[in-house]
Image 1 (tube, helix red, strand yellow):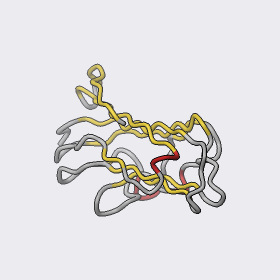
Image 2 (tube, rainbow, N blue to C red):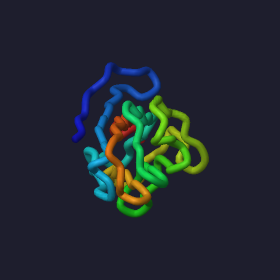
Image 3 (cartoon, rainbow, N blue to C red):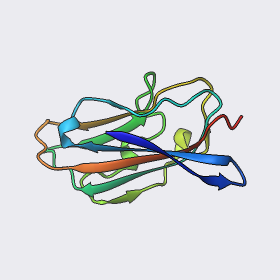
Image 4 (cartoon, rainbow, N blue to C red):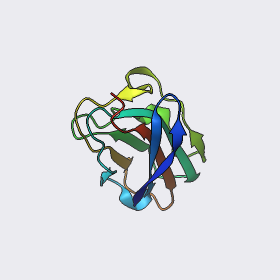
Length: 133
């Protein structure tokens, strides 16, 4: 389940928008599509807030990407799903800000290694400047 809100104007970007989605252990293996962003959008920030630890018997993974690259914006190693907290530092090829060349839908995917999770809730927030280019 996701939603989008508008934030006040920021000098560097003008009007900044925000998308937020809730993902939980019952979403195991089912990607969630956030609101599509148009070409020219600049993704300026992202955070993952784990409010309830995920407890799969092996590895809990979250990817944030698109239809082509599952972890384009958030890599599994960047978020510790079994530990509640807020994670907002992403590194490497998915560092913010990130210019979206063509319109795309951001996909979130939670995967429990053995599919036996019984708990886990996280909120993913993406801040962006529509048509920043």
